[in-house]
Amino acid sequence: MLIYSKPEHHDYQLYLALNDIEHSRTKANHPQTNGICERFHKTTLQEFYQVTFRRKIYQSIEELQYDLDEWMVYYNSARTHQVKMCCGRTPMQTSVDAKKIWSDKITALNN
Image (cartoon, rainbow, N blue to C red; front, side, top):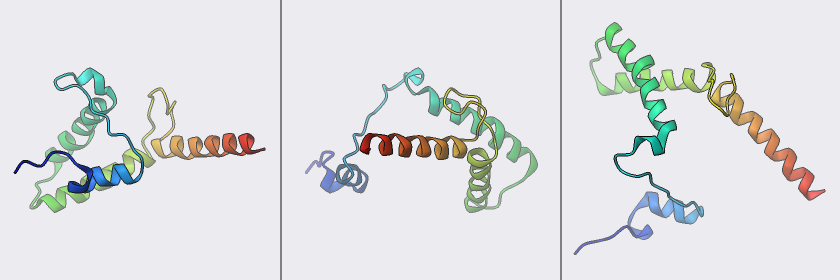
């Protein structure tokens, strides 16, 4: 019996349905439709993997994952970004600033 993508059969789909989140997909073989993710992958390759594999020999995938997690903290909290929304801030700073702006807009709408 073939089971199609029904929310009740997949935890991810169920999570999206329960939180009223629309799952959108990009076109296959069209990386330009997903430029932000493609750029992130390139940055991760150039700034983490290529550097890390020149400096260290990993004994396990867990060891590599630990270092990647550490790099992700740096990427999101310390490394500034020059993309449209960040404007020289870190992604974390951008997110915190956006939350404040959103809160101010909601407060203004409710008054």
